[in-house]
Structure formats: C-alpha cells, structure tokens
Amino acid sequence: MTSLKQNNSEFKFRPVGVVQTEIKDEDVGSTRKTSIKTIWIDPRFESALEGIEQYSHIFVLFWMIKNNKNRPLSGFPRGNSENKKVGAFAYRGRNHPNPVGLAVCDLLERNKNILKVLKLDAFNGTVIIDIKPYDNYDIISNPLTPSWFNKIIMSQ
Image 1 (cartoon, helix red, strand yellow):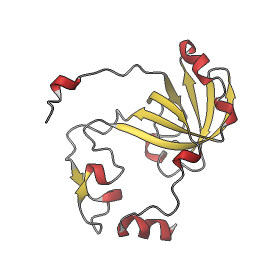
Image 2 (image 1 turned 30 degrees about the vertical axis):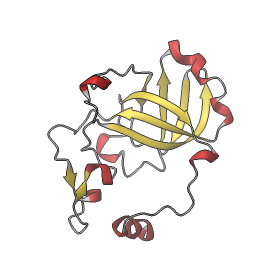
Image 3 (image 1 turned 180 degrees about the vertical axis):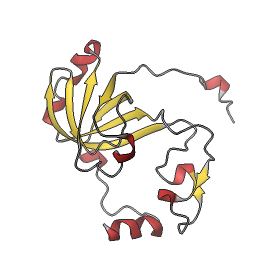
C-alpha cells in the first residue's frame, strides 16, 4: 500500500470565485431550490468560463468553511436520529475530512465573470474551488440509494 505522504497528502486549492447571496445562513438549505445565487469568478479565470453558457447545468464545488469544526465522521443523515447512523462518506453532510461541497446547479445566466445559478446550497462568502459542466456522461437512471434517502424523496 502506498503512503499518503508519498502522494502529496498536503495540497492547496486555489479559489476561483465566491458566492454572493443575501439569503441568511439559516435559510440557505430550505431555499436552495428557489433562491438565485450569484457566483463571482475571479477575473483571472474569466476565460475558463468560455462556452459554459451552452450548458443548462453545472457542478459547483465549494469549500464548506462554516460549521465544520470537530464534527464526528459518522452521523444521522439529514440530522434525523430515526435514520441509521452512517459514515460521512455515505451521506452528504458537513462532517467530511475535507469539507468540499458539491451541487448540481441550474445555470441561469453568464455575464462575463458572473454566473447566476439556482440550487446552490452555499452561504454568502463561500469559496468556489471549481466548476464543471453537467452533461450526459453524468446521468444515472435509477441509482441505488438507501431506504432513508428514498423516504425523504417520497415525502417531497
């Protein structure tokens, strides 16, 4: 087995942008599907956005800096103790060793280095670490998911 130290276990991300929204932190999750957020991309990376407006959806990767300290690596999905406790890699919570957030967002508009998106559950000031287009390679029909997740989906 290869050591992590031999494989650059310490590295740095270069922020490419920041989220701008007037939504209060406590309302970000509940307004995710309805609130439009602005992603300001550093002008040095504006050329990297060329052609992005040809996509309807994008992956947004961001650094979840808030509320991530000293969280255990297991927990109850969606904070619901009725769900079976699982490891951090088995649900989309904030308690991962590296607090990288991932959202599939509707890309509504691009104006130079400014993107308007829907379905981004990030706070104002959240650092964007990357953006990737969402395309047909990413579509999975009927993925296998745990029963606790299926109950959430059925209740919506």
